[in-house]
Image (cartoon, rainbow over all chains, first blue to last red; front, side, top):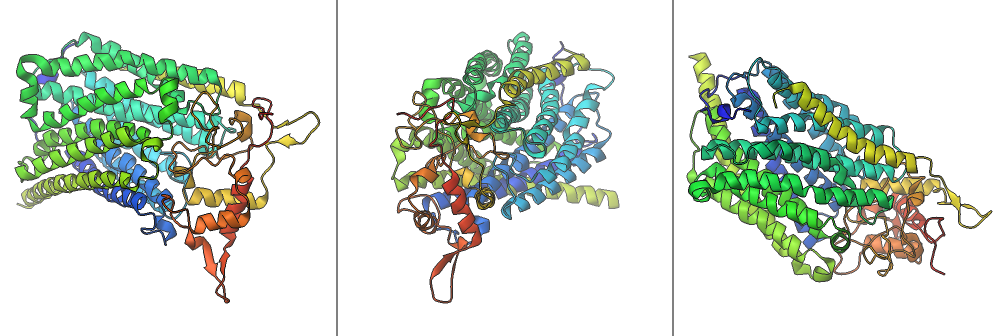
Length: 456
Length: 183
């Protein structure tokens, strides 16, 4: 397995066919990030002041919270995944994605459908399952858009005539394949032709684990591998373990689903399978830890990483990944799970994964990719710093607050419990606005340049 | 690892393994589960929902109540749901066999509602709670479910009535072959 190609410099700034779709994915990811953070702020305000905006049915907590979750996952994270994965594949020498118009169709379809689906949620057409809340009628369009935006680029990539497949690309292929399968099966068995009773909950938990670990998680792991190696200029340490890590990660992830239903009305043996496989996730997590931290630990690598914008974000990301994986494994055991199940502690765990790890890694990726596709520098270094510190403090602070104070026994009746939540969410919003201003100025300027050049 | 087909078949296998191992085995065990009498010859449980309760379930869904309220009681060794008074026994798979859209929930900002119908004393109490939740509660008031009539009296809309009928239908105060009530 050669690792040479990932060290090759990325020479082609804008001559690959993927530039336009990558720009579009980033632009819409930023838009959804701002929308979801504004919704997050409203939702946290409503917990502190339940009467805030309570007069109108559209803005009731139950709907806005659902809206926020979907805008964050299918808006921000999904678009970032499409953009980063496409870019990582195209950045490799000897691969030019020729059918970029297909990815643009996927981008258009995905974002239009998502807008329609979220509008329907606002109007009260929602389902009771996390991340399946959008009406089932929008699912086929999302499914097909995904094939255009992610699956076809991945297939085109692996079918290119020459070249090795680096570990990042295994995870991208996996992620691009898992989403449509898990999403399609779950839509059919839960919403279109519902199975009876609690089987739906079991299928839904399988869906969530696949989406969370194998689609979102895999994509973030892929980007981490790529940028750690690229920016530190070193090969991944203990690279021979990466294959084992990859296959054990994919093999165990789906099985961990019932660990999120402990104590629920499903057969006990199924719950036990979930607990056991959740513990087995230690194997891939340790391997990923060795690969990530090992690579950065050479020759004052951590200090170097801290001084590199991309790696600074990714450093926060891999620390969050390590902590959240340890917590997820530990709190899958029955006795500990019994204490924290249904509480805000689990929201804190989610926050640590989806924000501390995934979002931070994609922020880092954006700092590497956007200058290269626009051919310009970040307009303001101050805004970059503001983005990092607001999001690191806001994101990790929120996660820590929820993990430490999230038990009802600690916070029951304490109304000030939500004040830090509001503060940290506000801080994140500030960071996101700084990031969006910087990115849009850059994207718009480069779009204008391209426009001028074509007319010149 | 260079071979695309190998990677793809491996990924397919890992997905199929968890799908088969968890979901198909689950279907084999639970797919044919039906209602059962609490005692021999007695009526079948869980009871069928009334038409109004089915409409109320839709209102419950539309308002996103499931975001903050679960409908599942864990057994005594696994959390303190029973000690908190959420239900007289744990919920089991059979309690949900009639539900085409499950509302189990996964997070509790408010109490569990699996046995709320047995806890609530009257319709008025539930309406009162929906219009003005207890002080210190994070639950918003659902005033838009109520209208003031010509005489200045607040009346529940049809949706509020349906919602209350649904909430009253949430009960697990009967014996199930898998989970008996404590004598």
